[in-house]
Amino acid sequence: MIAPLEETAYAKINLALHVRRRRDDGYHELETIFAFLNQGDRLSIEPAEHFALEFTGKFGATLAKEYVPDNLIARAANLHQSSLAPAVKFRLEKNLPIASGLGGGSADAAAALRLLNGYFAPPLPASRLHDIAESLGADVPACINGVPVMGRGTGTFLEPVKNDVSGLFCLLVNPNIAMSTGPVFKGWDGVDHGPLPQGTAREILLNGRNDLERPAISLCPEISEILVLLTKSQPVVARMSGSGASCFAIYEDMESLMNASAEIVSQRPTYWTMSGCLR
Image (cartoon, rainbow, N blue to C red; front, top):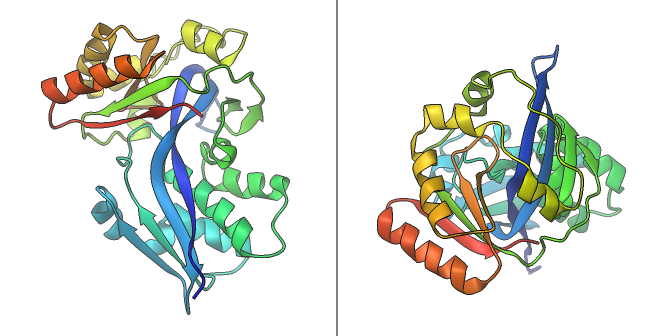
């Protein structure tokens, strides 16, 4: 029996997220720096008589209730093989909260594409993987390689950025509240507050912002409480990721990370947390 291949679907954070304008097609013109924790969901692939997708993990039960063909993993498999339901079984250990600003579904789709590229021969070229990823969602292309990268347009036009954040310690916190992206973008004030600063990933982290924090907080005040708690731990930066409700704090050392995590668990025991290092 062939052992299943496994991949980590790395949690995505936006070190900075600047909204420049609303486009004629209804989407928003963005500038962002994607970064990735070394933790996330776990996805495996193995031979099967027909396509199957199983869910485990803390948040797996929610996905198990959904219609499988609509899942991004299933859609990624179909597009990768140019056919419906290739004969493989995926098993997803869902550790990241759903609709949380951490790109969980996008990271899962990207991990599926990496697994499929290793499972089927010949592997698809990187350009084809990017095209498939872009068709699946704005965050999926950045999730393919899972390292810091600049995203423009809707986030799918990627440019390299100097990665000087790798190895920094990161704490993720979510109030266990799902946030739909649409209402948050709808609450954006429509004002262009300027482009991303120039520089390395760390310089942009230090000098950037998330233009969606204010509208997200208006819908979910718990985000503000989390940011206050994280700021008290004196991180390098504390900021909301994506459209929320997850927030992150960056630390130079493990001790600061562990102290901050313990404080969050003490103050908000019902909140979800995850700790790790930036890739």
